[in-house]
Image 1 (cartoon, rainbow, N blue to C red):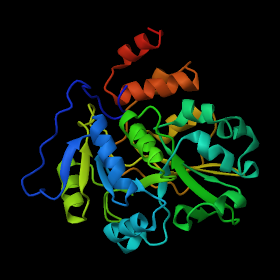
Image 2: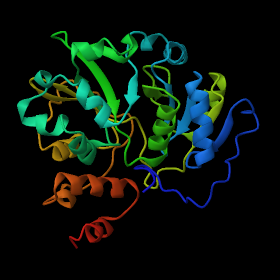
Image 3: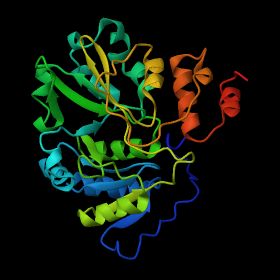
Image 4: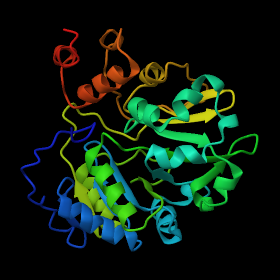
Length: 307
């Protein structure tokens, strides 16, 4: 599997051509190892790196670097001020930071087990959750927010199952970067950039030296990932995204509070509830990933041995 939103031919590492007026931003394929290494080296030195993820343009880098944080605020505008950056990290690194008292008892067997988190939610959703005060003191303040009761909140996504971003994260970690992360390409308050050429233009206008591009989503799914917020009283869907909230409920086997949920800015994945009926959460996640990659319901059932 390459990514949830696109399919790649790993035997085709040739560079993609950038528009003639994008000379200051080099455009390369997302799935070539040398391109990932080059991107990681630049990011570790403080540069933002542009990515087209098949249906979303993002800028990733060393989210723990104050220069990267300042660049994010400049590029996204005044609406970004005071809002924390999201990170891309392995669940096994985040789970020890979590404050168990801030997680509903019914969900601790999932949230406090890295393998369970990965099996149910990796590469699907950003997770915002309470962490221990002792852990918060080791995290740059621009990566934290606070809950209504004052608990420090940290947001991350485990990218396992999303191969190019996972490799970029691992390459950044090898460069000594503790907090890979970033944000979507857009001015805050405006829809996120979902067209490759517009992402390249954004990169050029904002001084991004390198842009790694994937192919289009085979089923036209675009937009930012959903966000789940965990707290002592339950789980809230902060933002809808390509994978609908009801599917995330199915993966968690727990209801979501949708009061105040921000709607998705682009059409969501069309998936019939019947396709997930009778599946374990792990099988259901596999079915969703395959649907995002363009598989038909019949092909998914056959793959899961349920035809």
